[in-house]
Image (cartoon, rainbow, N blue to C red; front, side):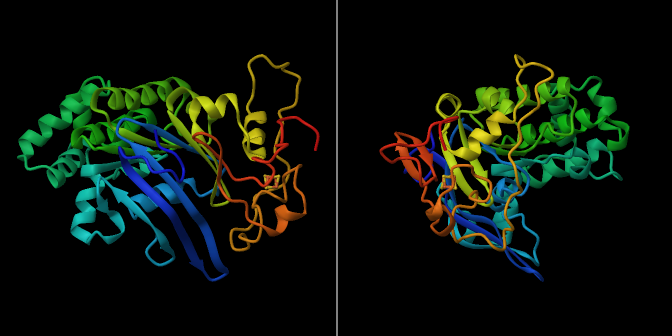
Amino acid sequence: MSKGGAAVSDAMLTVKDLKTYFYTAGGVSKAVDGVSFQISRGEILGIVGESGSGKSVASSSIIRLLPAKTGKIVSGSIDFDGKDVLQMEKKELLAFRGRDVSMIFQNPMTSLSPVFKVGHQMVEMICAHQKVSKEEAYQMGEEALKKVGIPDARRRMDSYPYELSGGMCQRVIIAMSICSNPKMIIADEPTTALDVTVQAQVLGLLKEMRDKNGTAILLITHNLGVVWQMCDSVMVMYAGKTVEYASCRELYHNPLHPYTWGLLDSMPKLSSDSEEELKTIPGTPPDLRLTGTGCNFSNRCPYAEERCRNQVPELKEIVPGHFVACHRQGENQGLVRGGAL
Ligand code: SF4
C-alpha cells in the first residue's frame, strides 16, 4: 500500500513533493503545492477534494498534460516503473501516454473527435501504440467494445460519437484503455457526466481491469461514496496540498482532518430525516495566488488558532500509515470530530 511520504518498495508510481504552478497575468497560482503519493501495482488510490483543490492538475502533471503557456511543473519528481517522467523526451512521453498510462476524462464527448467514426479513432489509437495491421486493430477494437458491454459492437464501430449516449462514449474510452492494456489508468471524475446505472457499470469495469490485469488506478473524484466503494487508499487534497492520506478503511473509520470531517458531514445520509438540512463547509477556498503562509483551511476551520494562520502544517504520520496536515492533530490532546472547539 502506498503512503504519503513513506517509501514503499513495490510502488509503480512515486510522486515526490510535486509543485505545479500556473503563471497568469494576475500572478502565480499554486495549483499543486508539494504533493507526494505512491501507487502500487493493482492498487486503486482515490484523490478527493472540492473543485480547485488541485486533484486534476496533480493527475495531469503525471502525464505532463498541462497548458503549454501557463502551466509548469516547477519542482518535485515523478517516477514511473523506474523511469523519470520529467526527463522524458517528446517521443518517449508520447509512448508513455497511452501505452503505460491511459487517462479517462470526465466528459467523454471531449475525448472523442466528433468528425471521425468510433472504429477509425480506435484503430488510430491502437496502431499508434502497437505493431499491428489496421485490420487487426479493427478486430481488437471491436473485441474491446464487446468486453465493455456495448451491444452490436460492429455497428458501433461504424458510428460517430454523437450517435452514442454519454455512457456509451465513456465505455468506448475505457475500451480504448483496455486495448493498450496500460499499467495504470488515471480516471478523472469518470462517472460525473453519467447517470447512476451507467456509473455503476463504468466503476465495475475499472475494478474488473484491476482484478484481472493488476492495473493500478488513480481515481479522481469529489464523491466519497465512490471512494468507499472502489479505493484501497485515499488522499484528501485542499487548496493544492494533501491534508490527509490513509488507507480507505482507516480514513472511513478514523478521519482526523477538520476538512475531511466537513466533506463527510456534507454527504447526504440515507438514514437522515428528509427534512434535515444538508451541512456545508462555510466559506470558500482561498485564492491559490495567496496561499503558503499558514494552513490553507484556516479561514474556514472552526478549530483554527493563531499558529494556523502563520505556520504551514506539515503532513505528519499520526498513526501508522495515516498522515494528517493539521497543527492540532498528533499532540497530546488531538482534536476529536464533533468535540469542543
Ligand atoms: Fe484547522 Fe488549524 Fe488544523 Fe488547519 S491546522 S485544519 S486551521 S486546526
